[in-house]
Length: 304
Ligand code: PSU
Ligand code: MN
Image (cartoon, rainbow, N blue to C red; front, side):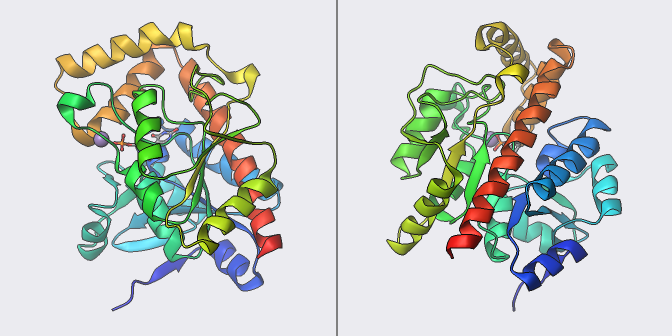
């Protein structure tokens, strides 16, 4: 059997015309942001990709069908639906096989993008190694996926709720290139700077495109993580955020939040504790990532 992919009208046309396409995930819509800002943001991000000259393909599983590109009404419904599954590599096939509905995480979106021949994907920030992972073993499947699936993922680094040094150590172990865009240190999601040196720095989208093609030409599996700093005007300084992250982590522990629920719980509490500032920053950084991803997709289309 082959898996059938349901393309939106816009993405089907872009494929026929060989236009550059940028994949977008849906877990950020269903589990990462509250309604109605989630749907508003998803629309803005799609518009940002179009304005930059590429075509957006938001990915989700709806009633057992793998959608690459959502029509406007599908995006609306997904943004308000209750009990949508959060899909990763482990459970995506089961959801499709049983007719379920699920939003795709970074890992699952990479898998779908690759199946659809899309090479670039924009998100907010990838999942990674959680603080306390030495006891919980909670390490996002996003890291393994970057090691296996040839898609360039543009994020604002990894989410600052994580153990960032351990996250980047694991990426190095897995052989995943981590490319800071335009600066020498890695960004930290809501903050433009961390105190971690960037393993690789690039300043132009064309270099990022060439690096992915070179990996493929060398037979190296996997993708790349582009760590794109949030615009300075929109950031929350790391020291202002640190006590809030600590409080949210403590509450998660006290309430025995575990597994897939951890990241949505932390993002939700940080939204409340910052009185919405974290969401404003999150929206700004995703839009910024969408613009860079579009540039990379355009460069890739030119070269290949
Ligand atoms: N980026 C955001 N908000 C999010 C996510 C990314 O700005 O909610 C999602 C992505 O789908 C990512 C997931 O794959 O968080 C990580 O979840 P976990 O830590 O359970 O692997
Ligand atoms: Mn996890």
